[in-house]
Image (cartoon, rainbow, N blue to C red; front, side, top):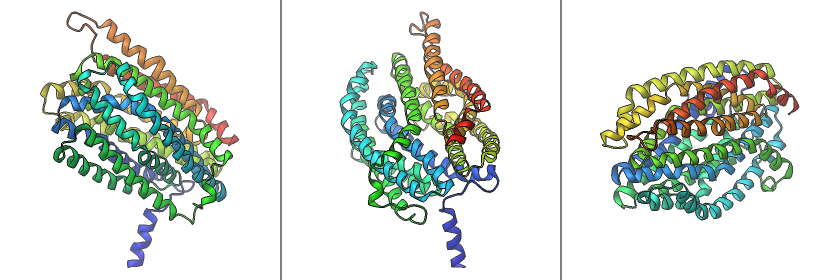
Length: 465
């Protein structure tokens, strides 16, 4: 009996081979642990916001939110490496190419160390000037700088968790990454309360807690990979930066990294508009984005699951299964997204009341959330089909779609609506412009992504890989 339980436990933590079995069931089995993990990941930021909002005040809440676009901009190196590594790992795993799999993972470990060093140096130097460039209110500027500088100094843990978690998911193991993230989330919340409520460290305490917790999750991922010698070799010789694997990782990951950079730049531009509406709207924006993070979780989870699914099946040359999984996975993602969005609309005020006791702030946040609601289902389509294209090796098409929707649609729409809604009561325009522009870009993005998927450039890319 004990042996039977042990075997079952080992199966739970074993990599999933997505080249066999029912596509929809395989995708769901992989996506559910990722969904829970992404929710836990979102708890990092949510815990930060709740604790500073409750113990320090609404301005501290606004400070943490204002720092986010700059942080995201400077993390694009890690996003590129993570996406490139995930695609290569899933394809080599599907093709059962042990030597290439080992070389890819080793090169990614070294690339991450180099990227972390760059961010540790550049981050603290540019964060202050960028915050001032965005006209960040003087009342929260110091807190923003403090938060960012601590995060950048402790960037190594965040970087390695994201990269190594991506490697584990590429191997089909989404459960281990989930467990490690849950452990780190609990540690983060405990340290948040300790540093902010007990030690009165304010925003700096929140940043320090996050850095420590993510370093823990990175260590746990390393230990897990060291035990997977039946799948690949994690030896010193593979840690050498091999040109072939480094180049392929960067080639595949660069479009996704650039996409995130473009998105972050657009967020920074829109953040400038957001800042013009004052501290109250900045704080409301933070609350909405925290709840938005949970609403987006199914979409991101299924998007990553589809990337791994497509990567493994392309590696195994099972192209028919790729299209079958794309259809089933997208419909499932849309259904899950619709349910979660409905729950947020029903219980939204209670959720937003966790962050602040200011009734006006809760009401404003809920009004903005209603604007975004339908967009989450559209994003399910975008993330799922983009995941298929990336897994097949076509990372350029999702990049161009993001470029069009974010730069050519969202930014002009946001500023355009703000301009045409100016009045004596609203001299800077209506603040709803920020969220209407997001809804428009999400909806058009889903339409463009579907057209590009049906067009089928990714199929040719898959054959060439």
